[in-house]
Image (tube, rainbow, N blue to C red; front, side, top):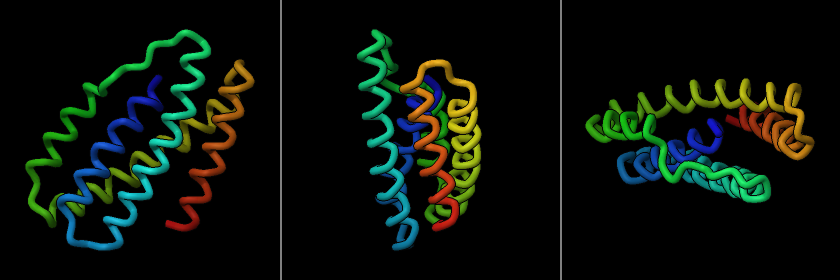
Length: 126
């Protein structure tokens, strides 16, 4: 489940952002991302349990990102974090839009529709 792993990475980077940044807006944004992604992962975890799907406990692809971001100074981190959040947001909108249009499982389709609406709303507020 790509969405679950991606959310795990967003949560880890959000925690790092809170620890590294001096920018209050970026810190508030990171807190919002952590909250939103924990909520999304809770829904995905519930669905996965019902379907007997084992979700990964870690995101190996995220580990490389985490190390790269960890090694940046504060200014570089803030710039790269903001860019990554925009890039990841666009990818999430695409993923959830595809799920809302193409998913056969009605519950997953419903999650896709809801998350597409959430992502579009956050684009208007961001």
